[in-house]
Length: 429
Ligand code: DLL
Image 1 (cartoon, rainbow, N blue to C red):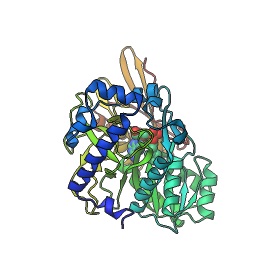
Image 2 (image 1 turned 180 degrees about the vertical axis):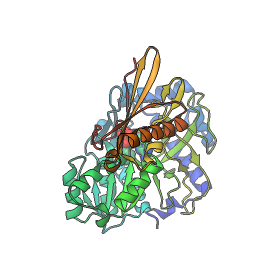
Image 3 (image 1 turned 180 degrees about the horizontal axis):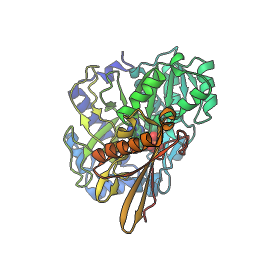
Image 4 (image 1 turned 120 degrees about the horizontal axis):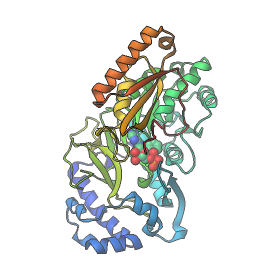
């Protein structure tokens, strides 16, 4: 049932005690880096003064800008102890680089193996990894984790859709790792090749790396004929393997022996209570080469600390609701892309893709939502399509509280990427 029973079933008191001990160790280790030596001195704290987990709040935050401009100064080991780097390109600005020691790579693989085992992957499974291998952590992170677990791993990498289908079929894949938008996109390739994924022995999908709604998950599960598990992580905290769903699928367990989680009000920096959405802030508890203290992820979610029937006490994260930096403000109303996803993915007429374009005319924000419509509906007459457009507009309006312009487009005509989907194009000045 458990990959690491002793750690996964630690009761809350013992888990907190372990975190306290590791927090002190981490702060002491981080303090050996030039960056944190300076920052801890400025904040006037040392590890000796950290008596409770709440004391973490006395430590300074670390931001993405800090990482970009001073990342190398956060290293706590000599250069020749590092064996790997990954970088996150991000949508804006310069890449952030994370360095790993051998132990960091091994611990990361073990955390990913823990996630995969929890969701049901076992030795004997054939696991096709369809995420990019390279600087992105999705490919190698899962690759090492799946091998550590002992699954037969196919390093398919991203893209090349026909080959993906062929590989799954030829090697009788039972599990896949895939970006959710690509999981929907690949359905077209399956159809073109006359293959029904439900006829393949697939039983598990691990989906993550980009926001997606519950409706999108259900669509993937139905069309592929498998169970899809939500997977959360970020390069700054190794990559994937930070939080993952168990078979209960009621939130993602954060591995609290490795990460200290805080949820804060992004404006005030004060803690948000359980159940209230706030910004996720993580402190590494086990990382050797580059431990980060109170890293502000910009990801928004809430935490659930109620016990989970699976027997793990590691608290659960809600679905990621969005990022503090991807919130769109239209006519003064705050909108998260996930809200649009939720509406569109719940409608059977909507095909696999959509795109939101924002422009401004005469000081007015204009939101245009281009929606692919399934073939059989697109073939209907003009009257039907006008009615459909109206219904979509109404559904979006009631969720978003602003009225978008909706344009219906033919299936498979909107641009796709091999990696994370780009759903919003903001052309406002
Ligand atoms: O996306 C790591 C990863 C790879 C996670 C494979 C899961 C699977 P980055 O490229 O650094 O790392 O991007 C991290 O992606 O801060 C979130 O905004 C977003 N993200 C990751 N997982 C999820 C998820 C990888 N399950 C950023 N739901 C994070 C929503 C997610 N957003």
